[in-house]
Image (cartoon, rainbow, N blue to C red; front, side, top):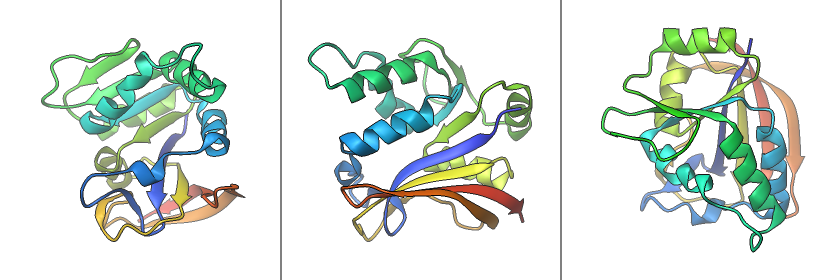
Length: 187
């Protein structure tokens, strides 16, 4: 049985993008990127909404001898994982090992978790909100950037109560902080 993990790089005030949709403040440096690679290396399946997938699909062709090792490593990790994109409007996907689903069905995702040999990760706050609401999230992995953006696209949904237990934490040289929590109860 796999766990469903929500992972996000957020501002200190809890946004993945500011009010203008910018997220340049969240780009990880090499130390953080290497850590993200290690966290995501064991993931078997990535679940994405349309917008998150369109951003991350660039990894399908990224990499090469001119790129830093950390970039090439993540590109390999991303390409090796299965991906499910939830979208009512996309016609096709632009990456291998990727399938398109029209609807996010909590029962189907629960069955996917039950049958998974490896963990799953869900990216994008809109899609993740649906998983939070359905009580499907087992862990939260948050990378907190040292910036307050004052508004924008929230990382975590309103209206959901989830008790958490801190499993791990790490402070990076760029003063970003990693927090890993296990869900202990859904209410």
